[in-house]
Length: 514
Image (cartoon, rainbow, N blue to C red; front, side, top):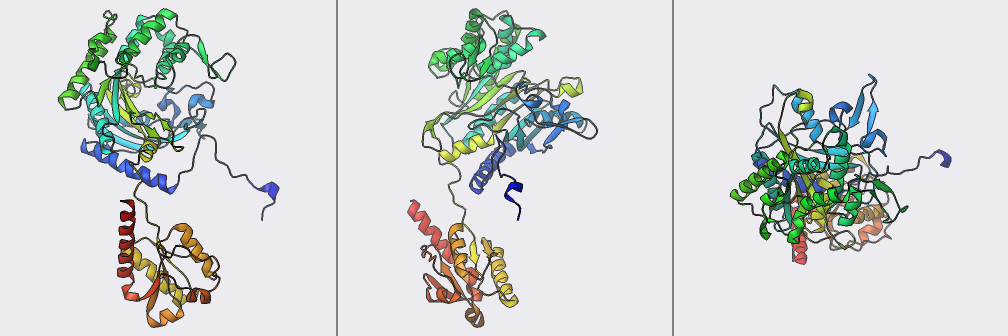
């Protein structure tokens, strides 16, 4: 045994989390429903590796306070830099560019997997999380963007969220045109434009006054100078901030309803920016998306134009969209919270072009798997069907003949589609096996001692009916005297009897739930 001084402390790295059976199963259940929608729309699966060459990912996640500017990176033995992917879109762009001559355009694909961001962790903010993406590469028309919005809506419906979500749509061309109009055009202002976008992206989390600080001189997390961390602002003056917020706050004029529902139209969005080709073009694209969605039966309660939608990543070039949950959702403490966005995406026509040197239009969206799963679970729409613990085949004797019998019983149950396990611990203390079955929540225990084996029988104990297991049973003899809620059947009747007992327990559970 290692000395205490030599022991390694067991601890999770900050910003990472272990996943447990219930959450893993709930996630799998949710992802199968999402996958079915993607497949129905004609998308095919693809996998890319967790690591890419750093230069292929690009610098779209600059975080000056973190090593490697927001990504996890290492240098290979050939002195090339590798990075863990921070989303699933940049690797897709590399894959398309590398296999461009073999891929049939438009290329419609979906992918699921872990992504990593070397950012400051916090409550609900992890450095490893799962995304589930769908993308169309090679489709220049905004009809592809409209289809993405419709597919996002269908995903929400498939997950049981009818009437509890909205897909909000904007266009980065509108925002880029407005920033150009207020004096933030040109390469020299690229950093300030990104700061502006990130500030606007916080309109759903911060007050307007706080966002104004981020657009202007900057903001202290604690609310007062010197309190908490300081976030440097974009340095805009009051006039610039007002023009910008007049655009992004367009939706607020309707007190949370859509602009269209309040007599406003996409045309109003370009008012005052008629001389900006980017704003005019962006508004025209939004108008087309709205028309296509309406023609397909998606009303403004499901897909809505909202100029406050930004999407934080730098590579978006056109329409951007988010899936926002509007339901009142309790958190783990029972407090009603606003979950907000659970997924989003947009058009990124320049990402594949970085490799090809030619225009390659693309659009897609990404679902935050853990965030959406938590919301669905808290709404009672996921993980409600309990996974039945395995039937436990106990071990009364350790000789080869007996062990072969126990293994045979276990396998016969498994072959019949019944979860089963043979006890693998120290079999000599039978009480420990019952304690193990109790902790596991096993519904039944299969027991065969020498007497039963000689008769060709097994004992089946109903552990649900006899839930109060005695922690005092220490020997086989004591157990034989305390046969509660158990009976004997012939060995060849084992599977049929177990299935009937499990069905009866299920009916009782369903009756109690009803």
